[in-house]
Amino acid sequence: MAKICAGCGKEMGMFNGKVQVKDKEYFCNSCWEKAGFNTWGDLMDKPQMYTSKDIIEMIKGSKTHDSIIKDFVVTADICPSAKFNDDTKQMILADHAFVYVTSDPQNKRAENYTLFSYDQIVSFELLENGESVASGGIGRAALGGILFGGVGAVVGASTRSYKSVCEELKIKVTVKDYKDPAFYIPLIIIGTNKSSSEYKEKMKMAQNILSKLQLITSVSAPEKTETMDKFEEIKKYKNLLDEGIISQEDFENKKKELLNL
Image 1 (cartoon, rainbow, N blue to C red):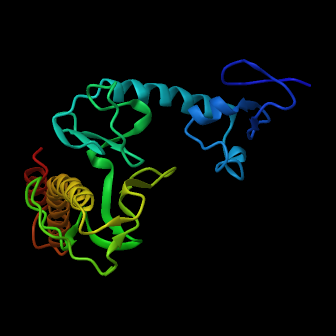
Image 2 (image 1 turned 120 degrees about the vertical axis):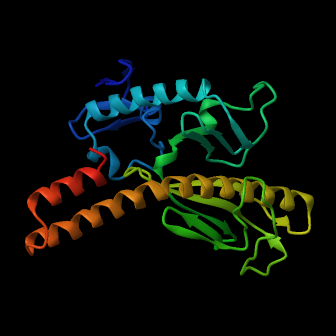
């Protein structure tokens, strides 16, 4: 018996690719992919985790996401794999080794990128041949051979991998997203000699991206630290109040001062 896709309303025959979700509704493979899932990789447990309403909302979100990316204004064009808007505090990152698209004058297609806000960044690291070369993030010092100064600060990255060929170079960005907390930006996906200009260019690209991410997380971290310091200060005065050293009025005045009330 033919099934009707809950996403697009199209009829699906017995042999059409389709996915049954938690509330027994069906979605065609096209709508399943539009919701952000992989037709082959996400067919084990994930269909039973979501209702048809969830999937429809994901499809709507995907359309909005594509529209935002197409209209994305780049203020910091670090490289084709990572573009930033410092005014809106957003960035778009490529999830595959970038291939230049000559038909797109802005070198930007919605299906090539994922949109993130700056405050979603938790941490990041550069992985070469499966080993961590450098890392950083909120509340963490930049580690590794990359000097995180301004964007474009490029020095030779130290690495524990002594192979003369780089089989894989990618950046892992951990973001605040319970569905997909790890996002990878692949830069090299096939064996590349480390003495080649291609390797040096991709390493420079990686350094520029990591420098920018470090700047973003460094800017956001002090605000959180300052807020925590204020709360710690209020707790100290509360202890003084509880011990009878200061009055309730003194405590209230100090709290208002610290919270800028």
